[in-house]
Image 1 (tube, rainbow, N blue to C red):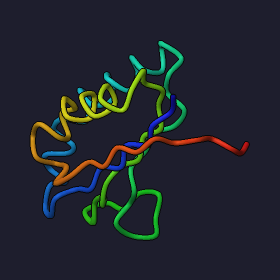
Image 2 (image 1 turned 135 degrees about the vertical axis):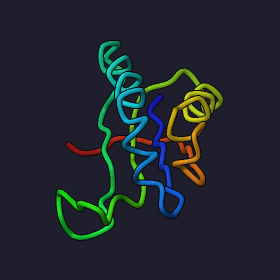
Image 3 (image 1 turned 180 degrees about the horizontal axis):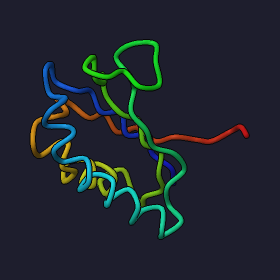
Length: 99
């Protein structure tokens, strides 16, 4: 089943986000290689594809997991969670309708 993982950045964590971005992307690339990643990306803090020092307010990931518990465990082990970039990460079942 698909799950939406919605991470919310803690204030002033852009430097930490950038420091662990490579580890975060490696985990996403592993999901992609397994054919389980639907989409992933950050939410800029301002109306710009490159927010610069304004940073990000969080990230959205939609991926396939065997269960809600597995999706929650994946989110809990992500470097953005373990290093405090995410102040919280909500995981919800997701049903893709379009496209």
